[in-house]
Length: 560
Image (tube, rainbow, N blue to C red; front, side, top):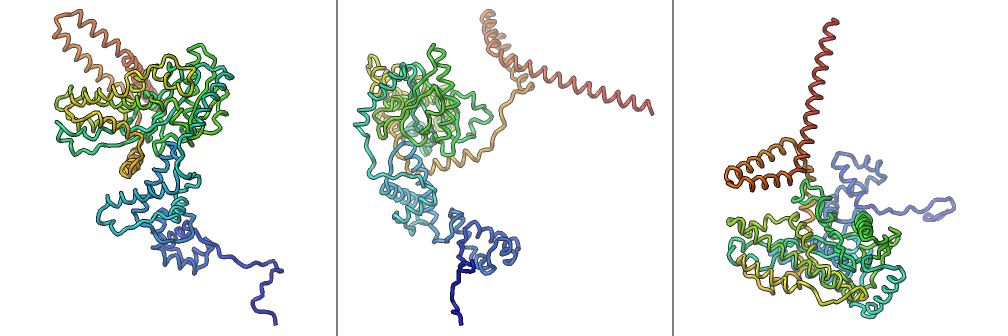
């Protein structure tokens, strides 16, 4: 008698292996069951046994909870669900890790574990009594699961955070000088750009103390955007600032972004990503520097110095034959990056001063306007204009002097920064006094330093909410001129001029003013004339179509 349990492989058959079922398939089974399909029918369509299908349907509550808890759809095991607090903490932790990567800050396992615990405790404190019983252990096992679920496969961990490599920083300038000599580049052809974050709607802590008591409970917003600022070593050419935020902020409804005084790019996290940088390089940097070289009678060949960061493509030298890219050695950014040697700090100080000056002018113009109301109306469009004006304010001598460490051969007569940050801080304090605010120099210094600080749990939550709010905004209709609206605008202008004429005893003065106003409005007048021509042509076409139709009907009736 043959053995009962013999496994004979000679006939080509093999032992059937059990195939693990993913959450995606389990979810499909549950959805089909809810629509009324029988286990047998589901089995036939999906290739699963009726017993397995029935088991999943019975266990559907636990399966669906697992899916709702952001489980990977390719997962095959229903594990014990994490608390909502842990899930929220992990979402904020992903934002924090992205921020560390963007700022080129190395992270270790221990650093991530400590940040996770701090975020969890901050969220737990925020939730209050309802979260008292929830616990979290930042174990290595938790980290491995978190890394897999968040798709952080390319996350690079280090030991202790590396300090700047002083030796590499000391050797690199001479190596760069050789590249510049061999390439025949002058100071006008060597460029550097640097990314930086900006809390565009962030005021000193004590802004809302003083005369405006009604604003004392207002929570200062910390909405954040990312900037890419750059210039050449001569300091005579500034690149147009790149601003990264969400795609459709409410303040820019209907405005063509190409006409903004900055380059507007969108990114879910409002950061300069690899794709954003590549687009900027190809469609903005190259055309800008090409036009600049032509205007100076220089051959179109430039050298771009960049720091080592994931958002800068490693193969950027392949993008354009006339642009050579050189990367700073790792961990030398804070020592060598020209834009980081005081230019960014000055720019942010100028931005703050302009914001305070804008608030002062607004409250002076309208005595009924309080600071709280002005701050509510201060939007990202106003911020963009302030960014452009603040960048214009950076002196060319300052832009040249910051190359002293990297390219000392390009810097002449360095005497320090004109209009130092300390001077700007004094200006801000003076403006604060005029606004009757209790702001001291220490408050302004603290605010300027906060742009470079690590994001807290509260700031990460606000950043996450900012993405949601901006992305939920529907795409607005673009702004359009209409003949009717233009006619109304010109009627009001003519009425206003007539009122001035009726009061002014000096007819020559009125004539000059009226002529100047109408000359300034000539571009709008031409648009209006074009609109009227199009409107008249449309009316004529409709009229002749109507006449033609009537004539045809008349002819046809005559034939009958």
